[in-house]
Length: 238
Image (cartoon, rainbow, N blue to C red; front, side, top):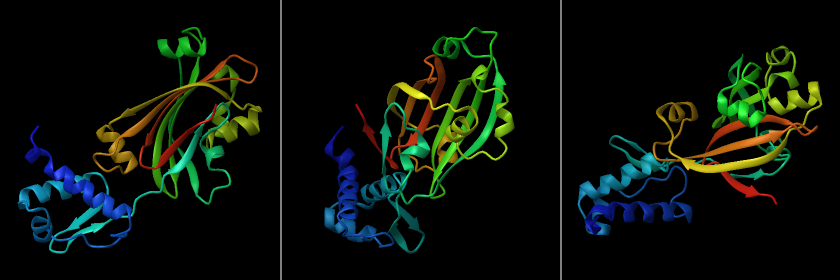
C-alpha cells in the first residue's frame, strides 16, 4: 500500500490527537475541507476519506452545510477480571448509573460444548439468558449466560423484575459464582451487535468467554460477553 493510499489515515490520526489534547472539545467544529486540504497539501477526496474514518470511529458527526463537529464519547471505566467480580460489582461505588436488561431466556438442553464445560449430560437442562447491560443508559455489552438449571430451581419466578443476575443468585440462592478462567479476544461487531449497542461502524468489541464454578466446587456458569472496546479498560487481577 502506497503513501498516497494511507495519507487519509495520517490526517485522521492528527485530528484525533487534536481532540484528545483538548485543541478541539466536544461540540467544536473541525476545520473545513478547504482548510484541511490547504493544511495537508492534499485534495478533497483524501480529506473526505479522513473525515469518514472519524465518523465511522465515532469521533465526529457531520451536518450538511454546517461541517464536522466533535462528538461526546463514552468514558472508559476500569473493568476488573478476577475470581469474584461481575458487572455490578465492578461498578459498585462509582458514580455511574448501570442496569441490566433481560432480552430473552429459555430453559433447554445444553449444546455439546456447554455440556462439556458444565459437566452435564445431554438430557439435563440449562437456563440460557441473553442480557444487555447499560452504563448511564448507553448500551455497553451483550451477554449470553448459560447456567445449570439444577442449581437454580424456579429461576423464572425471579426474572420478572430483572436487574442483575448475580443479585438474583445472591439473594435467592446464596450463590456467588467463582470465575475460574476467561478468554479475551478482540472481534469486529456484526450488524446486529452494531444496532443493539448503538456502536460506531469501526469500533471493535472485546469478546470475553468466561467459566465459573459454584461455591461448592462444581461447574456452574458459562458466559460469553461482547463489550464495547471504547467503554472499558480491563484490569487483570492476579
